[in-house]
Image 1 (cartoon, one colour):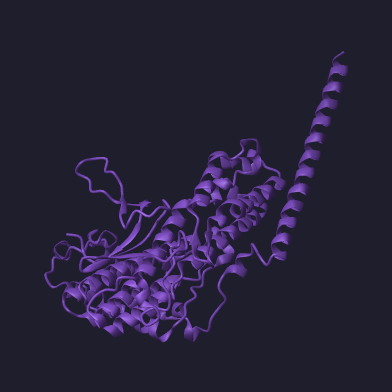
Image 2 (cartoon, rainbow, N blue to C red; image 1 turned 180 degrees about the vertical axis):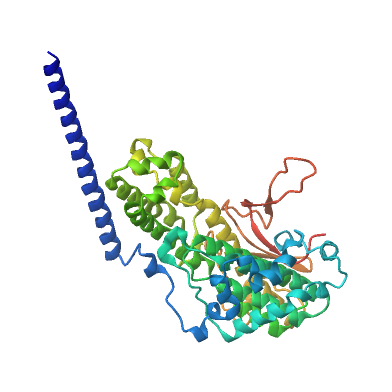
Length: 470
């Protein structure tokens, strides 16, 4: 009897193992076939998930800002905090108070700035960084292009040591330009603003969301002194024309498109690493640990579903070439991510790891893109005022003498809204809520009475107000 039981048990176990092996083999074959079919379909449409094909091409060293010794050091130093750029800029940046917000028509508080640096002469306070910033400016002038030697083949493991330094320089130049305006040194302030814009453009071709976010922060830093100079009518006709030329060359929507393409490529990199390097799986926690025991076919399906999620839900939320954003589609993608079908759980683990906070990225990109458009228009409006003694009643009066065309709202494709406001004016986009609030920005409701409301980028309009708030 016992032999019979053992025989039956052995038979059942062998049959069960055989069935499991057959299922795993079938899943591996199906997953790999589905993934390869997806790659062929993308190739037929001129698309690719090869990050090396999406990365910007190399440029001659003599044209490349990243090869200048000051910047090349960032990519080779064992301690980034000991590089010349870091030593010259970060001590000053660490003292900076959070003050001034052009989006709320608020100037930088020079009293707080002087207190932070313990120096009534603000230009003297920035003296420790003068030599290094001149070297940066000279390198930018001599080398008009930029490609940092990012090891894209390492995927999410690639290092971007230049990103934080570029961000720090943007913050430093923002306040130095404001200090220069206060001292009546408008030429120096204009040069610092243009240098800030140039530093933002140094990473414009990097197909990474983090590069896009750093670029946005740097470009937004340039807006503060530009806005303050406009509010005080400090800029000359020649300076305004140069600002317009610089700003018109900036297109954050194309960078948004490139950045998301790069993020899609990271799914393929993740697949290759997971199939060839099990140590990566050991670093995962929680739900993601399931990947360590998954058949390779399931990993193929995971990466396939990540890219399909991008194509079906994320990419329809914006059009980089047309310069448009569709908030309704972005909200739908957030809902789709939250309402995933858990019955397909083994095929969708990687979505938690690889799909970014889409609505936040796209919102910030739309706000920053509108800022650049508004700044361009504001310069054209100021040029009109210099020539005519007043601002125009309609933006059409600027075309074509002061601007080739009125920029289109990134949300609905209509010309940016405008109205005169006393001696000044308002410019605005209808913003994320897709309704015209008459140039009124959205504000958060503070949790405590002592807190100040903050801008709410998903409510109200995205506004450029020419005059400081009282």
